[in-house]
Every structure is written in C-alpha cells, then in structure tokens.
Length: 177
Ligand SMILES: CC(C)(COP(=O)(O)OP(=O)(O)OC[C@H]1O[C@@H](n2cnc3c(N)ncnc32)[C@H](O)[C@@H]1OP(=O)(O)O)[C@@H](O)C(=O)NCCC(=O)NCCS
Image (tube, rainbow, N blue to C red; front, side, top):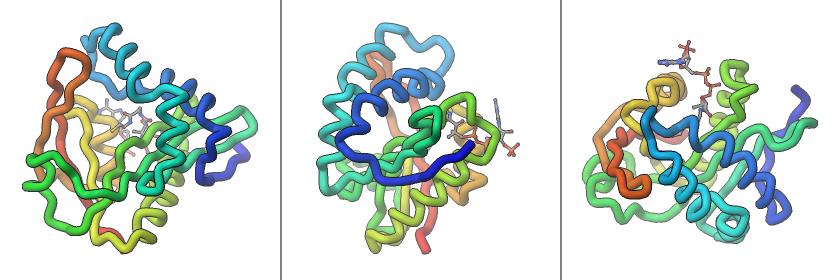
C-alpha cells in the first residue's frame, strides 16, 4: 500500500465518518446491540463530530491516507481526564489520551497499525507529556495484544457506556520518550 500518515483536516471529516462506520463495530464486544452501535456512530463519530475534533486545538487526528482512501486514524486528546477511575490509575503525568486508534480491516496484520501508533506516539511526545493512556474494551483481545506490543501495560479499569449498556474497559498507559 502506498500511503502517508498525516494530520487530518476538515476536508477529511466525511471520509473519517465513513471509515469509523466500518471500524467502530470491530471494537465492540460480540452481542453489542446494533442500535447502540448506530447511536454511537451518529452521536460521536459523525462527519460533524470529526469536523469539530479536527478544529479542536486539544485534539490531534492522524490519518493513514492511501490510494484507496483513508485506511486508518488515531485521535489524541491533550487534556486532563475527568474520569476518576482513570485519574486514580495513571502513574505517568501529565498524560495524553489515545482516544481512538482504528485501521481498516483489509489492513489488519500488515504493519499499518504499527506505523500509525508510531506516528501517534511521536505526536503525543511532542506535547511534552510524560505518558499516554487509553481505554480498551476488556473483551477486545486483539487490540489489547496490539497495545501491549506497542509498549502499553494495564494499569486499571473504567466503564464505558455504549447506548444503554455499561461496558468494562481496561486502562492502559505507557511512557513517552
Ligand atoms: C487494534 C488494531 C488497530 C490493531 O491493528 P492490527 O494490524 O490488527 O495489529 P497487529 O496485527 O499488529 O496485532 C494484533 C495482535 O493481536 C493478535 N490477535 C489477533 N486476533 C486475536 C484474538 N482474537 N485474540 C488475541 N490476540 C489476537 C495478533 O496475532 C497480533 O499479535 P502478534 O503480532 O503477537 O501475533 C486493529 O486490529 C483495529 O483497527 N481493530 C478494530 C478497531 C479496534 O479494536 N481499535 C481499538 C479500539 S481501543
């Protein structure tokens, strides 16, 4: 795949929403309600939401831009967490949140995610933070393995509301260079 990894712009918002509609369901545990997934896509991962994320000075969205279109994206949020469970778990402060990390399924297992996380860690380090953290569904073994390979370790748990269902996430963190 010929591609570049670059910061997203407002022009990417529609394509990011399309990509999110393919990749978000892959991060949900089996048995998640299609209605809950659809509501999350509409309320959090819409074109309008992506336009706002890209415009937010505390948010960095990176995309894998390939001939076939956007093939992956990550989102960093550089502000203090309001989640008390996360705040209690983190040991490397200040810490940037890796809020989203998704690769199109046609590119899983091929190294694209490693390149994306490498670039994302570079952006996170540039903020001057000491650590980076994320929440990942406790049933998402593939992503947990990927994050462990990328230097993250489990430091706690938190809850995540998908529609009306409360999901359990692991909190993971790693130091930044
Ligand atoms: C998470 C994601 C970015 C990782 O990218 P990837 O290209 O699949 O990652 P890799 O192939 O490098 O690593 C995945 C690892 O999980 C392993 N794995 C795959 N399926 C697995 C499973 N069901 N259980 C446990 N491990 C699994 C792979 O073997 C690999 O480990 P290895 O290199 O030791 O063999 C990508 O899978 C993705 O976008 N998933 C859907 C969205 C998602 O879940 N995002 C994370 C939200 S927090």
